[in-house]
Length: 377
Image 1 (cartoon, rainbow, N blue to C red):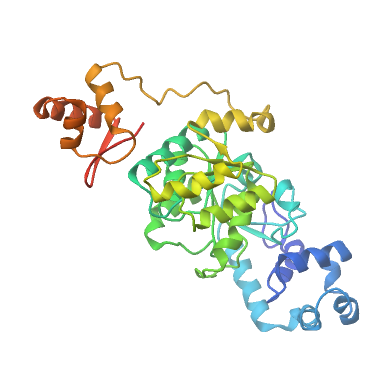
Image 2 (cartoon, rainbow, N blue to C red):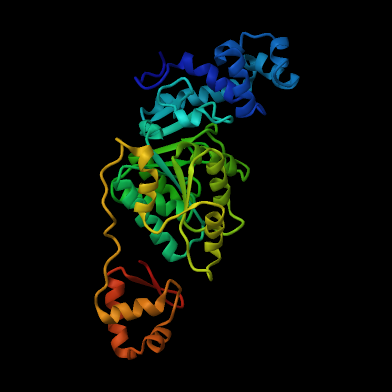
């Protein structure tokens, strides 16, 4: 045995699955059709050309018959074998493994293989997908981080795509409380994208799991990311959308989740914020409106019976009892407003207001941003 690990198949058992996944143009749907017919990939490579072409196009049938002589495929297999041997943190999970998530396996386009770096057990545990804008507002980033910290403490694995913005905030929320998080990539698991997330990638690899269906070395390609979203939603019990424009990849993830029978959650926002419009659209179409992490937990509770940590209503929303603070919060709403506007609307003298605003910012109630202040809770 070349790769020894109690949670993985040996190399000879992995080989048929890997070879099938590397056939150019075959894809998961046609692969699934072949496996349904022949029961196991190992049977495919002993099948005749005529048997294969009755199910798939002749060109693909020819590639399958000649896969063992294809130098490109053999080179990729050698690279994968070397990668597996390099670290016990490296794994490949196939549909015949007990680690392959049952819900993911039921998809008509389920991945033929999953490359994993980190804790491979996490991909079978209860997960919540979290998606949103790559350019969120400060409030959106804060909400994503705090929601995911609370949800992670309650026992959910936070799953996202390691993109800029909301994805990163979601992973950071889970990591910040030493919770579990999974990053589903649109590249090979050996690629860091975006490059500025090198540190985040390393943290997830060491404390969570990096997952992809794409072969090692696969670079960022626009078409890969919508495809990977079906895995993100397929792994999850539901998908939470934090901020999203109307034309947004996050809405694709939400649509896929709904089609897969997963719950869709959306956080509402200001009507003046373009990044709220995607969430409002989802809510109009039937997504669950959530105002706190507990709304998500209550909705998912029937599916989490016996596996979720006990939770109590969130205490992160501070009760403001100071009359001046209450007045400031009342006039602020959730939009960016200047100190002058707050002073005018609240009737609080500017000198007195400056002290109140400083205290509220130190307490994490508001945040200073371009153009003034924004409420955080």
